[in-house]
Image (cartoon, rainbow, N blue to C red; front, top):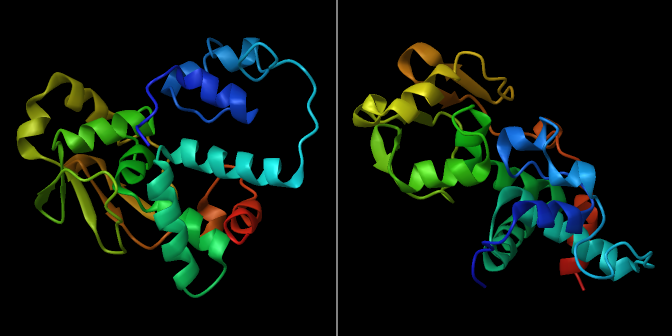
Length: 208
C-alpha cells in the first residue's frame, strides 16, 4: 500500500478527531476540522450506524494515521507487540512511540511527524554519534539523538534547534538544548502517551 499523499485534514475528518498532522495549523484556528468535522465524501454528514467491526477498524486507522505508518508496518508492530510480555495493546503503542521520527517530533525538532520523518530521511540527525536515515528505527533507553554538525549551518535547522530549549517533552526524554541533543532516559510507558486511544479495539480486530 502506497503512502497517502492527499489532504491531511481529510484523515482527521474521517476519524472524527484531530490527529495533529499539520503542526501549528491544527491549533491556530485554521484547521479544516474545526470548520467541517463531518466525514469526507458525498454522504459524510449522514448518520451511520457503526458496528463492532467498524469501531475496531476506525481505532486501528486512527492509530496508524496518527503515527504515519503504512498498513504493513502497523501489522508488523502488532506482531512484535503480541510476542512481548505484558498487554499487547499497550506494547503496540509503546513500539510506535519509540520510532525515531516520533522521537524527533516529541523532542520539539519538528512541527509534525511528517516533517520529522523528512528531516530524518535527509540525514539531519545522528544516533549515538552515527548518521541515521531510517525514520522507523526504534530507540532504546540510553540512546542519544543529536543534530548533525553540518546540519547546524542550515537556517531552518538553526530555527528548529532554538525550539529545543522551550519544548515540552515527555518524561522519558531529556533535552540538552546547549548541545542540540536529546537523551532517551527510559522507555515510554502507556501513561506517557497523551493521545486518547482504545487500543483494546485494535487487539480485538487483529485477534479475529
